[in-house]
Image 1 (cartoon, helix red, strand yellow):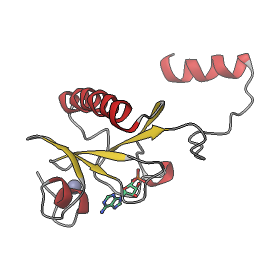
Image 2: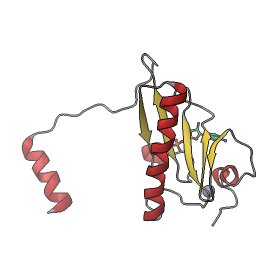
Image 3: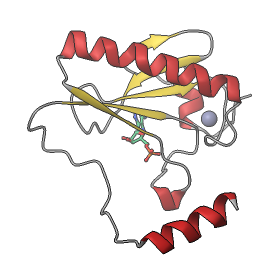
Amino acid sequence: MREDNCIFCKIANGEIPSKTLYEDDKFRVILDLGPATKGHALILPKDHYADLLELPEESAGDVMKLAKKMVLKFKEKLGCEGFNLVQNNGDLAGQTVFHFHLHLIPRYRADGQTIGWKPQEVSGEELEEIKNQIVG
Ligand code: AMP
Ligand code: ZN
């Protein structure tokens, strides 16, 4: 299940070289070419799924297990003190490569990065309304 013009299909399957940190029959973990911090990596499934909604449930579980394994290595080898997992879905959400990938971003004291959002004000009534909209 590969897509012809997908760069991450080609990287994940070794047709385009990458700085590979880990590989098994289902996944490849590579260093991001435009890293937020030292060691910024991407988990790529070898099969093509555009985003999280296309990723099979079992693979979603495998991705999280692999993320844990990798960030433990980052702590041990790079000495990061924390890490962010980032996963963008849809161009509105900042996705630029439409082959599922999970960003693993090691964090260091004073690394100069801010990964987050601007908190908005919301009332208790609004939260209740939103809750009901989703689960009501
Ligand atoms: P996103 O914005 O979540 O789709 O992230 C795409 C990420 O892929 C960015 O962080 C890019 O720096 C990275 N990227 C794009 N092309 C390559 C490539 N050929 N090798 C490694 N990383 C790449
Ligand atoms: Zn692909």
